[in-house]
Image (cartoon, rainbow, N blue to C red):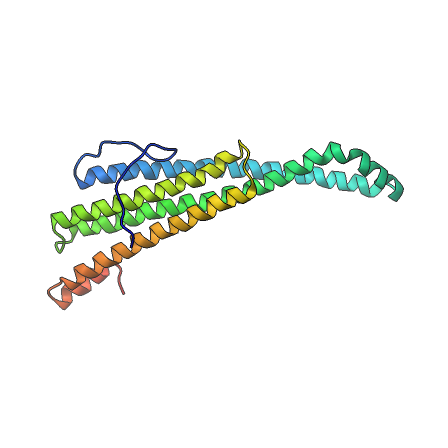
Length: 226
């Protein structure tokens, strides 16, 4: 697993804070991050709904257009199509953009959900580790540093994904959008995998430090280990 440095820069979804000492303070910071991610998901939901409504309208307009075309004679269709080509070029372009945007926003929603899963995984595991007598205070402090490093990296990746959302207000090719999304998705998945592996290693260590089979059984039940 890669090493993580704990830095909290200012960006679209990151926060700049003076971190007080103690586990409760760290969890408070993560709640702020998680609340911000949930806010993004709600915003994405609204954008998807709006885009879906626009798509329905455009598709209905397209059906009307096609129905009108079907009523014309073949010779008239060719002539009419040529004359109206430029007039309806913008309409077809808008239809394509809306359909494309919906695809991107749904993908963004999946990745923001992954970010929340990362925070939830942290809270679940670290909450249990704090109550586990097999870990010393210095060890818990080291865990915190790793956790915050992973979370900071995942938030950076989410920032990159949000560039795709904002890119619909500026010029950006589909290829570039896909490149940003795929790169961020890959890194975020790595963050999640690293976090799961780190937790699994700590759980394994706690079980190894157990003094009896009964204690091992209780720990496996606590950590949901088969």
